[in-house]
Image (cartoon, rainbow, N blue to C red; front, side, top):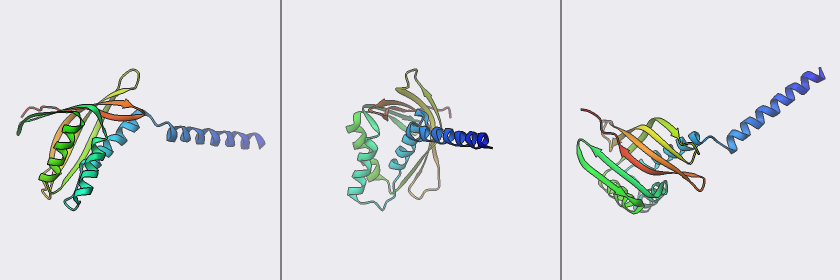
Length: 165
């Protein structure tokens, strides 16, 4: 009976250690998914936020990008736009928030590929957005490149995937 109790206690301790390791040292894929969720949350807004809240949200969102970020948006409905660096991203985000009443952004099905030394990742995902109170859903495939800097995953490259129509 004592051997069974010791075995159960050992198994419980091993399970606790495994769980704690996962909590304190999460897999890079989990951290990247959390970062993507945060980006989608910060990119979304309602028309009820004030100017200070708007600037604070944009600042938090810009902090999710590396200082050398490159963004290329190419969609059939609009001309191609390229943004370089955090300052251009900040200006574009403030203009979007000023021009729209509300925006709801969600990222679906991220496919994450890590490089060999796990300091960079490539993500292919589908972005879904609803603008204002419009029921129409805008869907766009995106490719992202992320870098791990100072323990945080930052978006270094973002580009739209041109689809056939």
